[in-house]
Length: 451
Image (tube, rainbow, N blue to C red; front, top):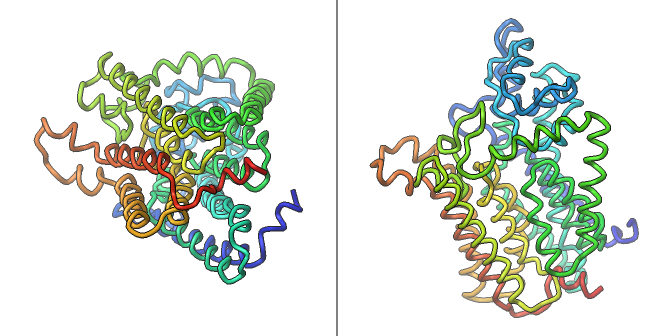
């Protein structure tokens, strides 16, 4: 492994380190840009210890689920989570915990701290892991570029360009929303970005599978990213994925027993499209940018919404699969990542703006491919459309438009789905680019396959 890392030259490390510092500053600042957002640290320092503690919106769900799983309670029962909150003088309503028990076990060390201190640690961990994700994404194209670029000056120019591209996408994609809400997407994203890094730079399919398995145990939907590896016969990725699932579930059972997993299986039917989650707002009332949310807004709660969402999801998945197979290549292409990353979001029962961070590595790979393999108007149009659809997918239409514009009720279900429309546009554009052949036949992933 160390020999393989020797190819990452000092200039690359320096540039990446500088960009990462900039990203960290932007990330911390970006989380407080909206009016009404508050700085946790300043609030804590100015408030009395007797006042109720106001935590981030989503963090109490993870914190009290972690406490609850260690106490042997039902972490999918919001009444139980609220009973744990009562002793801590926390003001927030605890939202339902909707993830596998594995995430609660990961978060459990934070329960050794009081909730406000644990929240600070959680925010710091989020910043660190997001920056690690960005570093791994920027470093991922190393091996191909060192085969294609031998001139030192051009190498430096390339690394400046790829780092600036990552910075641009970072500014467009709502990383800061994850900090505001206290979300857990930093765990998932770092696993995904590391998986791609190990596939390209380390050529280690088993580790790729292990990382994707861990991501899927935190939030189930990342399991979709295993599909492009399977259809391109990377069977060791599948073996690593299954090994991670079995091993970590086994470890989790040794820690907290089988009961939390039984409760998770019992809870799963509440996550299907059209179903309400006990103790939480109905998905139709939330900022749901998925196909399920669109179906609920159009058809209302009921079987029809669930059926429409399920059928549409299957058709979209089949279309992406068809385009992946139609290329007739045995090599796994970097263009394949973005379509499945978008599908991860739009086929989820509940998806919010903060989930857009999952498209980050796929968008970097797609933009990099367009820039290196197309030229002239073809490059400009595709590069511009990719950036535009990423921007529209990431824009908070709810805060800046929907909550301020009194629109006709008949129009509202359709007009309040702009993020979904943008994601569908990004999916279509990614499939078009996946189908096209650029000026150069060599791709980032195909070099790995041939080696």
